[in-house]
Length: 279
View 1 (cartoon, rainbow, N blue to C red):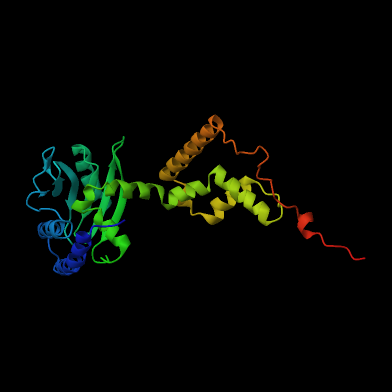
View 2 (view 1 turned 120 degrees about the horizontal axis):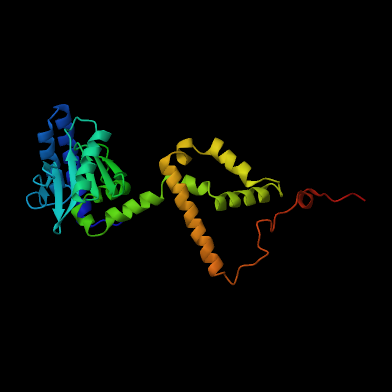
């Protein structure tokens, strides 16, 4: 995505500074309070917020204060759960932050120790769940790399008005290995693979079940098609194709030919393997 010039300039100026600050803080084993101070400065200097007006530690959620919150355009944009700079971020830290977000009705939460930043989006369903949108390691980030710029921009004030978070999230939801694996295992795609193999192998007899078995056992890793998330994706893909089929039946294309089957133009082995006889 094309970032505003002032944002790129800010990244180039501030990231190196905070890489040094964070490394020194980690080496000195600074506590959580010191880390929160560093994070607040990062939100102002790197990400463009007014730390006096838009960054607060006074947001109470059911009697408990979250570490930080970003308020912009009259509403809370992010809840931020902070840990000390030397603390490894764990699932139970995220559970606390997710509970904050769920109780306050804020879908976007950040878990950070200053060095690692995790951006999550809460899904308000029963039970409450959340998706990891991206991870950023400030010590490893390259401010001149477009991919790293895009991730940093998710946290920027300028990105809030451009639906940057939602666009990035939607792309991640669609462009990941589980979704791609789900499409590979879908009936229409396996049928295309069968058709191309038959073309490639001069009409070789092969069925879709055999292809699917090979894909599951030899091509894809098991976690791509097994587990709760994979099952949900596969069901969603099936519903998608079902809707597409229904639309095609209701609005058939005038250019569609009833004879345009997957068997068309598949040469037989006799056609390709025949040789002229000698006189």
